[in-house]
Image (cartoon, rainbow over all chains, first blue to last red; front, side, top):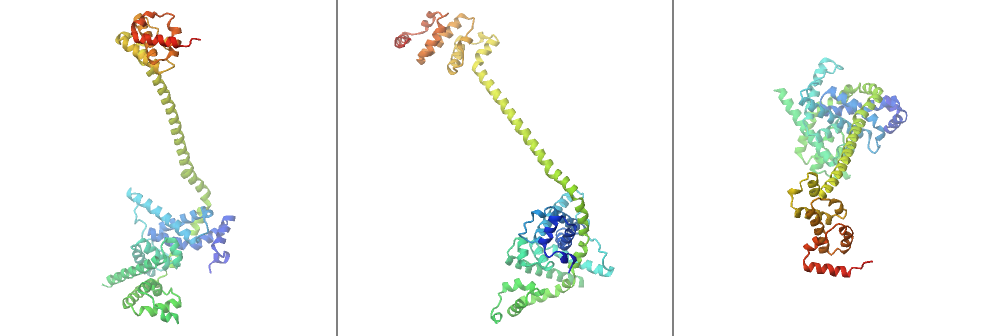
Length: 195
Length: 240
C-alpha cells in the first residue's frame, strides 16, 4: 500500500481536500497516484521520454486549474486521460509546425538512456522496450489505446468504453486484433534476429 | 453444470482470447473458454502463438518502467504549482482578456464608423434630393446660363418640380428678368392647375398671380374649350 492510499480513501476525498484547502499533500498524492498512467499515455502519443514528462506536467497543472469543473460523473482516470490526449495532440501539432519551419526535429529526443538499472540489463531492456513500443506505435490508434489501457493499465472494458467512446464488443474485437498483430510482428522480429 | 452444456461461439472465443492468454478471466470464464476452444483448432494455434510471443512481454515490467520514468513528475508539478498564480494570470490576460478587448475595440470602431457612414449617406441623400429638385433651374441661375436652354424647357422643368413637390415655392423662384419667360412661366403654371382641375390652388395662386400679371398673356394660351371650362368652374366655385 502506497502512502497516499493511507491518507485518502478515494479520489473524491482527494479532490475535496485539494479544492477546499489547496493542500499540497493532497496535490502530491494526486500526482503520485496518476503520474505513471498519465506518463504512459503521453509516451504512446509522443514516443519520447522528455516530451512525455513535459506533457504529464502540463496535464497535472491543467487538472489542478480546472479541478472545480470536474463533474465527478466519470472517474478521475477518465478525466485525466482526456486531458492527456488533448495536451499530446496540441504538442504534436506544435511539433509538426516547428518541424515544418525547420525549428525542431521530431526524432530529436529519442533514445534517452535510463540510468536506474545496470548497463547490461539496461541495454537488453532498452532494446526490448524500444522494439515493443515501436510495434505498439504501428497499430491503429483505437487498437493501440485499447491494448495499452487493457494490458498495461488493467482497466475494465466499461472504463475503456467510456474513454474511447467505443462499444464493449468493438473494444474486445480491437483488443484481439491488436494482440494478434503484436504477436505476428514480434514473431517476425524474432525470426529476423535468429537469422 | 450449466457451463458444461453452454459453448461459446467462434466470435465470443476470439473476443475472450487475449484475456484468457494473459490470465485475466475469472475461473468460470477460463473453464468456459477451455470447453469451447476444443472445437476450433485454428484458435488453439493462435492462442499458443500469442502465449509464446507474449511470454517475454509478460516478463518485462512495463509498469515499473513507466513509474521509473514518471517518478519526478510530482516534484516538477509541485514546483510549477508554486509559480502558477503568476503564470495563470499572465496566460489569462494574454490569451483571453487582451484578445477579447482587442476584438471589442474593433467591433466598436466598426459600429461607430458604420453609424457615421450612414449619417453621411443620409446627408448626401437629402442633399442630392434637394439638388435634384432645383437642379436645372439653380444651375442656370448660378451659372447665368439661361440662354443655353429654351424657355419651354425651363418652364416645363420648373412646373414639373412645383407640381411634384408641394414645398416648392414658385413665387420665390420666379424672379426672372426675362419678361417673356416670366409670363410664360405663370401662364403655363396656371394652365397646368386648370388641366388638373385644382380649383383650390387656382384660387390661392390667383392672389399672387393677379397682382402683377397681365391676364391677356394667359388668355393667349387658352383655347375656347378650356376657357369655357374655366368659366364653368368659376361659376360653380363657392366664393365665401
